[in-house]
Amino acid sequence: MIPSTLARNTVSYLIVLSITTLLISEANASYALQEWNMETRLNLPLWLGVWLLGVLLPANLASVFFVKNHVAARWVLGGFVCSHLWLTIVEVTGAFSVQGGLVSLGHIIFWSPAIYALYRYRSEIKLPSAYGIWACVMLFVYGVSMIFDIRDATIWINAQFA
Image 1 (tube, helix red, strand yellow):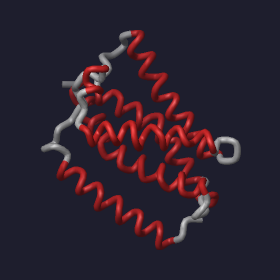
Image 2: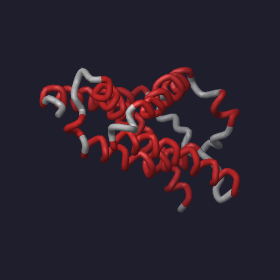
Image 3: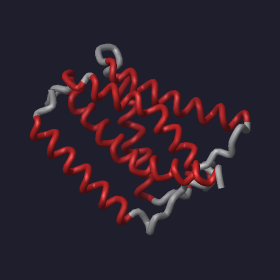
Image 4: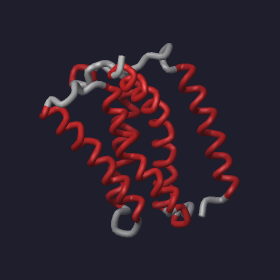
């Protein structure tokens, strides 16, 4: 179980981080309506590239170390794989133009069950175990990612109905 002071501190930290992130997010710059192709990915701001390749990718892939003994890790890995498979299918079939907001929508759809699983099996999160640290990192990573994903998915959905 996560100690209550850790939970309070984590929530407080996420709130402050969220507000700060929104304030400094390049004057509301959004990739929601930009094509999410290799050119876009190669020209991302440094901070976003570091976040995607240096934090998000390793945190999700680290779930493979915990899938044998932890249900939540299976959901994290499954959500990560499904979000990439889904985009590959969308791109190959041409069902939609792959834009940043569509990527964000996939994160919301496929990562939400993992967020719920981390919450549902929170009694398994024991600090300072490796799994406990990883689970806390994943909750932080999902929290930060969802700030941008919800914004970009909303922009993308609104553009589809405009």
